[in-house]
Length: 613
Image (cartoon, rainbow, N blue to C red; front, side, top):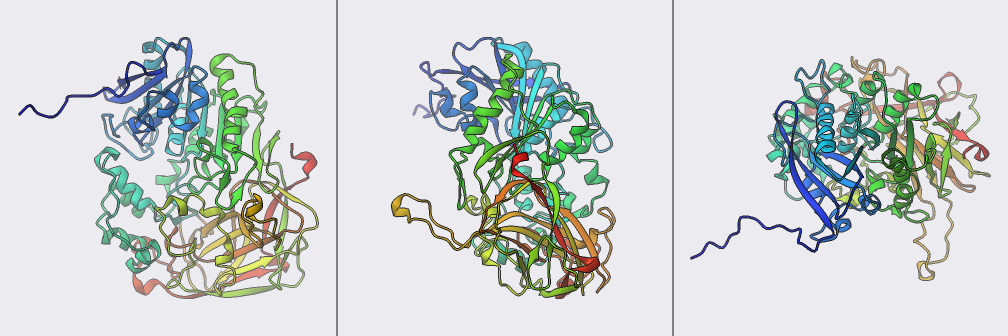
């Protein structure tokens, strides 16, 4: 009857090629944070690469049960640890193995945080402990991480520890109302509900999701009613993060005082920073370029701030960059970037390696499949692509004024990907931005404007900007604009000859964005639209480096829903859409104007190829 249990088992056996240490590092308020330190045996005089995560430091450092360091760490760490780096992952306060209380994207000490700690102070205290208690280090630290870890990377740069020498924030969460994660220009992203619940339970360990069984997202959200009704149906309305977004639908101080680009721009930058994102980042496409813009005035000599855009989905730089959805690139673009630019950047500041002279901007030209380095960003000069009365588009402003109409029905919203929709399925979610848009082209509630086939390449380098002149018969409306590269109907050799699958006629979205009409005059003070009144909506699409090849067409699609990625607009003004009732959801006739003084257009950042490198 000997109990068949053991107190512990050390997975790192004597023959392992690495050392693994677990430390509980004390913060200034006494809270201790769970920290995993890994390095090859025999490491000495080595820099530290730190990531601070809400997603389980233990799990992040056990990719495989192995005695080989590069097998237990994420793929992006290989080049670093093979070159003698010490790799450190830490659970942020209140999550997984760490003590304390978790607050989603904890604000810095100030109006929204009256305590004496934030992610900046925790990063400082962590770095201070590491350089004093890890004997193998050379005393130099870099921080890196994507998404939430991109946020904590930026936080480490606010009042940084002297040992912090370089930072690489990847797809950071920066402003979750304007264009990251929770909202885009006021339209709520429903997938945040599952995320909020999961993170709020069991210190992030419980893996709790909304237990709604089988069935697709489109039906589940449509039948529930408003997004708020969905939350109340499943009993999550009092989860703090859920309550916060439902009580703050407009861009009030609650959101603007949390905007990380504003925090960064208001403080002197001293840490060299390489900001990264994916061109088709389905979660945080806004943050990195926003921080880049905020910091540029501090760095006229290109010594501190750099921006990289790869042909990736969210966090794609850390994984494999051969392809995305139906797209195929020139080799493993993610590995190429890490080896050619990211690691030399860290090596220079952490290992005293030669200065790689990191360019101001490093971008991958999709369409042409090549890397570009640029002295500034954006590189393009804005050139309007006008919509016209024949469902066409071109670079000459049409003289005749007119409009095209469609009926938008909240009972039949336009799906964001083909049904059935399961956003939790990574095969659907990660590549959704590059899905062929022909699945909605031709719907009566989607307008499609297209150019003639291009006779020469058109190179875009920057963020296209929408100038939409539109009216509605309702008192509120969402406007979705897509800029699309339409491939010609040409077929290469078949896959039996080794080619990739052909996609003649493919409608590739260069960029997609939404704007909630009630905010056309003020993001913080929503107001009802006047039925029939033409308003001018201006908003940006994501940053791109894309070449539209000869023979391809450009297309602009306009619609009024992107469901269930974003909650439905009832199209009648209510104070808070989370509380909209069934009777509030009404059909509306939407009018898109073109020509004359109301010439709707997408401003394209066009660059001559000779100037692109």
